Image (cartoon, rainbow, N blue to C red):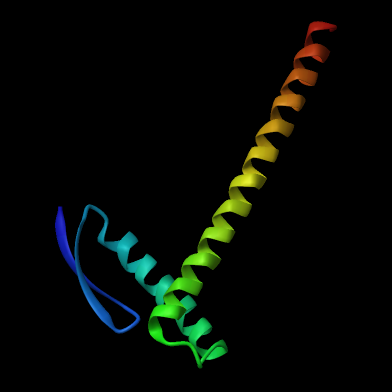
Length: 89
């Protein structure tokens, strides 16, 4: 594991990782999103902004999880239909 220093919204953190590039990509993404939120809600202090960001990320995650479950159900139905069609050929 490699030690890496990252900065998230003005604070430095030391991390150990097997994928330095992945962590740096996450760092850039998080900082970009926090910067957008900060510009939009400039009256919020740092802690409230981080809580808002956490809520938005969780909402996005739960929506994607729900969509994935729906797609898996649809795939199950399609696989069953495909199996029936192949059995009748």
